[in-house]
Each structure stands twice: as C-alpha cells, then as structure tokens.
Amino acid sequence: MDIQACTEAIRTKVGADSGLAATLKFDCGEDGVIRIDGSSTPNTVSNDNVDSDCTVGITLENLNALLSGDLEPTTGFMAGKLKVSGDMGVAMRLQRVI
Image (cartoon, rainbow, N blue to C red; front, side, top):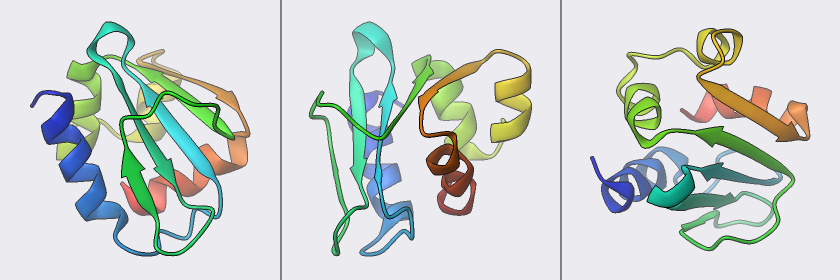
C-alpha cells in the first residue's frame, strides 16, 4: 500500500473515537506522514506533518506489515523496526487501535 492507502486504512481503524486522547504521527520519511488527532472527537487522520505528542518513525513497508498484523508493535519496537519519540504512553495506547 502507498501512503494514501495506509492513511485510509488507519482512518478506518481509528473511527470516531480511538481512545488515544492525544496526537500521534507515523513518520515514513520520504514516503510521507500519517497523523492521528485523537485529542478531540471525532478523531481525524491526515497527512499533515505537524508536531504531535508521539512520533513513530517507521518505513512504509513496516507500516504495511503493522497494519496487516504481520508485525506486532512491541516486536517491531524491540527489533528496531520502529522508533518512538515523545510520549511513550501514547505509543502504548496505539496497540488498542492498530
């Protein structure tokens, strides 16, 4: 999936109220970003590259694996396939959404 398809997949998973209660950004480098604004209801998902409470650095390939269930978030973090900066608590809540 390209970044737009991933954005739509995340939008579907997030729904109106993800329970994140914060902002989170997937930074896929040159492929783009996907930002979840879960700080208000309804939640929004966009490709805006703005500051977020938590940023997950991940390749587009690994993001696809994460969305398809082939990559568990904790395993990906431990293996260095994703890097978290900012509020780690937000990243932990992400597991309920993805």
